[in-house]
Length: 300
Image (cartoon, rainbow, N blue to C red; front, side, top):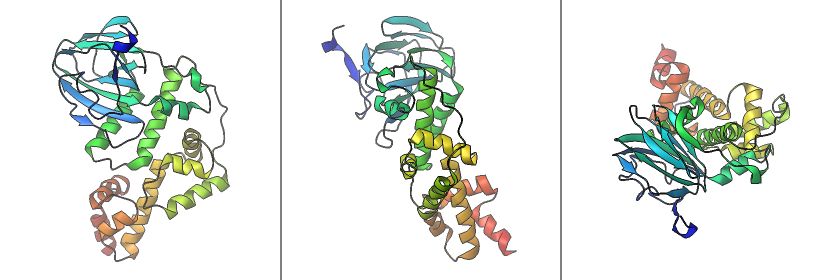
Protein backbone atom coordinates (compact mmCIF):
# COMPACT_ATOMS: atom_id res chain seq x y z
CA UNK A 1 0.00 0.00 0.00
CA UNK A 2 1.44 3.40 -0.96
CA UNK A 3 1.79 6.10 1.70
CA UNK A 4 -0.70 8.29 -0.16
CA UNK A 5 -3.44 5.66 0.27
CA UNK A 6 -2.92 4.85 3.94
CA UNK A 7 -5.96 5.69 6.06
CA UNK A 8 -5.27 7.43 9.37
CA UNK A 9 -7.24 6.89 12.56
CA UNK A 10 -6.76 10.08 14.57
CA UNK A 11 -8.36 10.30 18.01
CA UNK A 12 -7.94 14.08 18.00
CA UNK A 13 -11.01 13.97 15.77
CA UNK A 14 -14.53 13.43 17.09
CA UNK A 15 -16.03 10.07 16.10
CA UNK A 16 -12.61 9.06 14.73
CA UNK A 17 -13.55 5.38 14.52
CA UNK A 18 -16.66 6.14 12.43
CA UNK A 19 -15.99 4.63 9.01
CA UNK A 20 -13.63 1.99 10.41
CA UNK A 21 -16.24 0.01 12.38
CA UNK A 22 -19.98 -0.45 11.66
CA UNK A 23 -21.35 1.25 14.80
CA UNK A 24 -20.38 4.27 16.88
CA UNK A 25 -18.86 3.54 20.32
CA UNK A 26 -21.29 3.06 23.21
CA UNK A 27 -19.00 5.08 25.50
CA UNK A 28 -16.43 7.74 24.55
CA UNK A 29 -14.19 10.15 26.46
CA UNK A 30 -13.89 12.63 23.56
CA UNK A 31 -13.90 16.18 24.91
CA UNK A 32 -13.18 15.14 28.52
CA UNK A 33 -9.49 14.22 28.87
CA UNK A 34 -6.27 15.39 27.22
CA UNK A 35 -3.61 13.06 25.77
CA UNK A 36 -5.70 9.90 26.19
CA UNK A 37 -8.91 8.68 24.59
CA UNK A 38 -11.22 5.89 25.75
CA UNK A 39 -13.91 4.10 23.74
CA UNK A 40 -16.12 1.08 24.44
CA UNK A 41 -17.56 -0.82 21.46
CA UNK A 42 -20.19 -3.41 20.75
CA UNK A 43 -19.97 -4.41 17.10
CA UNK A 44 -21.31 -7.06 14.70
CA UNK A 45 -18.85 -9.24 12.80
CA UNK A 46 -16.68 -6.89 10.75
CA UNK A 47 -13.33 -6.32 9.08
CA UNK A 48 -11.27 -3.14 9.32
CA UNK A 49 -9.41 -1.83 6.28
CA UNK A 50 -5.66 -1.33 6.59
CA UNK A 51 -4.83 1.88 8.40
CA UNK A 52 -2.45 3.56 10.84
CA UNK A 53 -3.19 5.01 14.26
CA UNK A 54 -1.74 8.45 15.00
CA UNK A 55 -1.82 7.60 18.74
CA UNK A 56 -0.52 4.47 20.47
CA UNK A 57 -3.58 2.28 20.99
CA UNK A 58 -4.42 -0.56 23.39
CA UNK A 59 -7.40 -2.81 22.62
CA UNK A 60 -9.01 -4.83 25.43
CA UNK A 61 -11.24 -7.82 24.64
CA UNK A 62 -14.40 -8.75 26.53
CA UNK A 63 -15.64 -11.61 24.38
CA UNK A 64 -15.10 -15.28 25.02
CA UNK A 65 -15.48 -17.91 22.31
CA UNK A 66 -14.33 -15.37 19.75
CA UNK A 67 -11.49 -15.36 17.32
CA UNK A 68 -10.17 -13.31 14.45
CA UNK A 69 -7.07 -12.24 12.60
CA UNK A 70 -4.92 -9.16 13.11
CA UNK A 71 -2.18 -7.70 10.93
CA UNK A 72 0.46 -5.62 12.72
CA UNK A 73 3.22 -4.08 10.62
CA UNK A 74 2.66 -6.71 7.93
CA UNK A 75 2.63 -9.70 10.31
CA UNK A 76 -0.62 -11.69 10.54
CA UNK A 77 -1.71 -13.77 13.54
CA UNK A 78 -4.94 -15.56 14.42
CA UNK A 79 -5.85 -14.29 17.91
CA UNK A 80 -7.58 -16.18 20.71
CA UNK A 81 -9.21 -13.01 22.17
CA UNK A 82 -10.19 -14.38 25.55
CA UNK A 83 -11.71 -12.12 28.18
CA UNK A 84 -9.02 -9.71 29.36
CA UNK A 85 -6.60 -10.15 26.45
CA UNK A 86 -5.00 -6.96 25.14
CA UNK A 87 -3.47 -5.88 21.84
CA UNK A 88 -1.00 -2.99 21.51
CA UNK A 89 -0.95 -1.08 18.22
CA UNK A 90 1.91 1.45 18.20
CA UNK A 91 1.33 4.72 16.37
CA UNK A 92 2.45 4.80 12.75
CA UNK A 93 2.47 1.08 11.93
CA UNK A 94 0.10 -0.61 9.48
CA UNK A 95 -2.84 -2.35 11.12
CA UNK A 96 -6.02 -4.18 10.21
CA UNK A 97 -8.15 -6.88 11.84
CA UNK A 98 -11.39 -8.85 11.55
CA UNK A 99 -13.92 -10.35 13.99
CA UNK A 100 -15.83 -13.49 13.11
CA UNK A 101 -18.74 -12.87 15.53
CA UNK A 102 -20.42 -10.06 17.44
CA UNK A 103 -17.73 -8.42 19.53
CA UNK A 104 -17.32 -6.29 22.63
CA UNK A 105 -14.06 -4.47 23.19
CA UNK A 106 -12.55 -1.27 24.57
CA UNK A 107 -9.76 0.84 23.19
CA UNK A 108 -7.49 3.27 25.00
CA UNK A 109 -5.35 5.57 22.86
CA UNK A 110 -2.34 7.49 24.21
CA UNK A 111 -0.85 10.48 22.44
CA UNK A 112 2.85 9.80 21.68
CA UNK A 113 3.88 13.15 23.17
CA UNK A 114 2.57 11.98 26.55
CA UNK A 115 5.00 9.03 26.59
CA UNK A 116 7.85 11.38 25.67
CA UNK A 117 6.96 13.88 28.41
CA UNK A 118 6.66 11.24 31.13
CA UNK A 119 9.64 9.22 29.95
CA UNK A 120 12.03 12.15 29.57
CA UNK A 121 13.66 11.49 32.95
CA UNK A 122 14.93 8.00 32.13
CA UNK A 123 14.84 7.30 28.39
CA UNK A 124 15.81 9.28 25.26
CA UNK A 125 12.59 10.49 23.62
CA UNK A 126 13.79 9.52 20.13
CA UNK A 127 14.22 5.91 21.33
CA UNK A 128 10.66 5.44 22.57
CA UNK A 129 9.22 2.75 20.32
CA UNK A 130 6.49 0.41 21.54
CA UNK A 131 6.48 -3.27 20.63
CA UNK A 132 3.34 -4.46 18.77
CA UNK A 133 1.33 -7.03 20.76
CA UNK A 134 -1.36 -9.34 19.43
CA UNK A 135 -4.55 -9.91 21.48
CA UNK A 136 -3.45 -13.17 23.06
CA UNK A 137 -2.07 -12.13 26.47
CA UNK A 138 -3.40 -10.40 29.58
CA UNK A 139 -2.03 -7.54 31.67
CA UNK A 140 -3.57 -7.05 35.13
CA UNK A 141 -2.36 -3.47 35.61
CA UNK A 142 -3.71 -2.32 32.24
CA UNK A 143 -6.98 -4.12 32.96
CA UNK A 144 -7.34 -2.21 36.24
CA UNK A 145 -6.71 1.12 34.49
CA UNK A 146 -9.30 0.29 31.82
CA UNK A 147 -11.93 -0.50 34.46
CA UNK A 148 -11.18 2.67 36.46
CA UNK A 149 -11.41 4.90 33.38
CA UNK A 150 -14.65 3.22 32.34
CA UNK A 151 -16.13 3.80 35.79
CA UNK A 152 -15.01 7.45 35.69
CA UNK A 153 -16.85 8.02 32.42
CA UNK A 154 -19.98 6.29 33.66
CA UNK A 155 -19.99 8.37 36.86
CA UNK A 156 -19.41 11.70 35.06
CA UNK A 157 -15.71 11.92 35.94
CA UNK A 158 -16.19 12.45 39.69
CA UNK A 159 -12.56 11.56 40.40
CA UNK A 160 -11.28 14.75 38.78
CA UNK A 161 -8.05 15.69 37.06
CA UNK A 162 -5.70 14.30 39.69
CA UNK A 163 -7.03 10.75 39.37
CA UNK A 164 -6.86 10.86 35.55
CA UNK A 165 -3.35 12.36 35.64
CA UNK A 166 -2.20 9.60 37.99
CA UNK A 167 -3.69 6.90 35.76
CA UNK A 168 -2.07 8.42 32.66
CA UNK A 169 1.30 8.55 34.39
CA UNK A 170 1.03 5.00 35.73
CA UNK A 171 -0.03 3.63 32.33
CA UNK A 172 2.75 5.47 30.50
CA UNK A 173 5.44 4.21 32.87
CA UNK A 174 4.10 0.66 32.59
CA UNK A 175 4.17 0.82 28.77
CA UNK A 176 7.73 2.14 28.79
CA UNK A 177 8.91 -0.53 31.22
CA UNK A 178 7.17 -3.55 29.71
CA UNK A 179 6.39 -2.79 26.05
CA UNK A 180 9.16 -0.42 24.89
CA UNK A 181 12.02 -1.66 22.69
CA UNK A 182 14.53 0.44 24.68
CA UNK A 183 14.27 -0.30 28.40
CA UNK A 184 14.27 2.66 30.84
CA UNK A 185 17.24 3.36 33.09
CA UNK A 186 16.99 2.09 36.65
CA UNK A 187 17.06 4.66 39.43
CA UNK A 188 18.23 3.93 42.95
CA UNK A 189 15.63 4.18 45.71
CA UNK A 190 15.17 7.57 47.30
CA UNK A 191 13.74 8.57 50.65
CA UNK A 192 10.85 10.48 49.13
CA UNK A 193 10.22 14.21 49.25
CA UNK A 194 12.12 16.28 51.76
CA UNK A 195 10.24 17.51 54.81
CA UNK A 196 10.19 21.08 53.49
CA UNK A 197 8.87 20.09 50.06
CA UNK A 198 6.26 17.79 51.57
CA UNK A 199 5.08 20.61 53.82
CA UNK A 200 4.85 22.93 50.81
CA UNK A 201 2.63 20.42 49.03
CA UNK A 202 0.40 19.87 52.06
CA UNK A 203 -0.08 23.61 52.60
CA UNK A 204 -0.93 24.13 48.93
CA UNK A 205 -3.46 21.28 48.96
CA UNK A 206 -5.13 22.63 52.11
CA UNK A 207 -5.29 26.14 50.67
CA UNK A 208 -6.86 25.00 47.40
CA UNK A 209 -8.81 21.98 48.61
CA UNK A 210 -11.92 23.14 46.73
CA UNK A 211 -10.11 23.08 43.38
CA UNK A 212 -9.73 20.22 40.90
CA UNK A 213 -5.97 19.94 41.39
CA UNK A 214 -3.71 18.49 38.69
CA UNK A 215 -0.67 16.28 39.12
CA UNK A 216 1.46 18.63 36.98
CA UNK A 217 0.35 21.56 39.16
CA UNK A 218 1.55 19.88 42.36
CA UNK A 219 4.78 18.66 40.75
CA UNK A 220 5.59 22.19 39.57
CA UNK A 221 5.59 23.44 43.18
CA UNK A 222 8.64 21.32 43.97
CA UNK A 223 10.04 21.59 40.42
CA UNK A 224 10.15 17.92 39.46
CA UNK A 225 8.44 15.89 36.75
CA UNK A 226 4.93 14.54 37.42
CA UNK A 227 6.26 10.98 37.30
CA UNK A 228 8.91 11.58 39.97
CA UNK A 229 6.49 13.60 42.06
CA UNK A 230 3.95 10.75 42.02
CA UNK A 231 6.66 8.24 42.95
CA UNK A 232 8.30 10.33 45.69
CA UNK A 233 4.98 11.42 47.20
CA UNK A 234 3.91 7.81 47.56
CA UNK A 235 7.29 6.91 49.06
CA UNK A 236 6.85 9.70 51.60
CA UNK A 237 3.27 9.05 52.71
CA UNK A 238 2.47 5.54 51.46
CA UNK A 239 -0.49 6.77 49.40
CA UNK A 240 -0.97 8.61 46.10
CA UNK A 241 -1.70 12.36 45.92
CA UNK A 242 -5.27 11.54 44.85
CA UNK A 243 -5.80 9.36 47.94
CA UNK A 244 -4.23 11.98 50.21
CA UNK A 245 -6.45 14.76 48.88
CA UNK A 246 -9.53 12.58 49.37
CA UNK A 247 -8.52 12.04 52.99
CA UNK A 248 -8.01 15.80 53.48
CA UNK A 249 -11.41 16.55 51.98
CA UNK A 250 -13.16 14.01 54.17
CA UNK A 251 -11.31 15.27 57.28
CA UNK A 252 -12.37 18.85 56.52
CA UNK A 253 -15.93 17.74 55.78
CA UNK A 254 -16.11 16.00 59.18
CA UNK A 255 -14.88 19.17 60.89
CA UNK A 256 -17.44 21.38 59.13
CA UNK A 257 -20.26 18.94 59.83
CA UNK A 258 -19.45 19.17 63.56
CA UNK A 259 -18.48 22.84 63.89
CA UNK A 260 -20.47 24.79 61.27
CA UNK A 261 -24.07 25.37 60.32
CA UNK A 262 -23.39 24.83 56.60
CA UNK A 263 -25.62 22.41 54.70
CA UNK A 264 -24.13 19.15 53.46
CA UNK A 265 -24.43 20.50 49.91
CA UNK A 266 -22.42 23.64 50.80
CA UNK A 267 -19.82 21.58 52.65
CA UNK A 268 -19.41 19.28 49.64
CA UNK A 269 -18.56 22.21 47.36
CA UNK A 270 -16.33 23.91 49.94
CA UNK A 271 -14.09 20.84 50.32
CA UNK A 272 -13.81 20.10 46.60
CA UNK A 273 -16.55 17.59 45.76
CA UNK A 274 -18.88 18.03 42.80
CA UNK A 275 -22.06 17.82 44.86
CA UNK A 276 -23.64 16.20 47.92
CA UNK A 277 -23.91 12.81 46.20
CA UNK A 278 -20.20 12.88 45.35
CA UNK A 279 -19.30 13.70 48.98
CA UNK A 280 -21.64 11.02 50.32
CA UNK A 281 -20.11 8.33 48.11
CA UNK A 282 -16.55 8.92 49.33
CA UNK A 283 -17.54 9.81 52.91
CA UNK A 284 -19.27 6.46 53.35
CA UNK A 285 -16.37 4.63 51.69
CA UNK A 286 -13.78 6.18 54.03
CA UNK A 287 -15.71 6.87 57.25
CA UNK A 288 -18.16 3.98 57.03
CA UNK A 289 -21.33 6.09 57.34
CA UNK A 290 -23.00 8.83 55.31
CA UNK A 291 -22.67 12.51 56.33
CA UNK A 292 -26.27 12.46 57.58
CA UNK A 293 -25.59 9.38 59.69
CA UNK A 294 -22.37 10.99 60.98
CA UNK A 295 -24.31 14.09 62.08
CA UNK A 296 -27.00 12.01 63.72
CA UNK A 297 -24.45 9.97 65.69
CA UNK A 298 -22.72 13.14 66.92
CA UNK A 299 -25.99 14.73 68.03
CA UNK A 300 -26.98 11.78 70.24
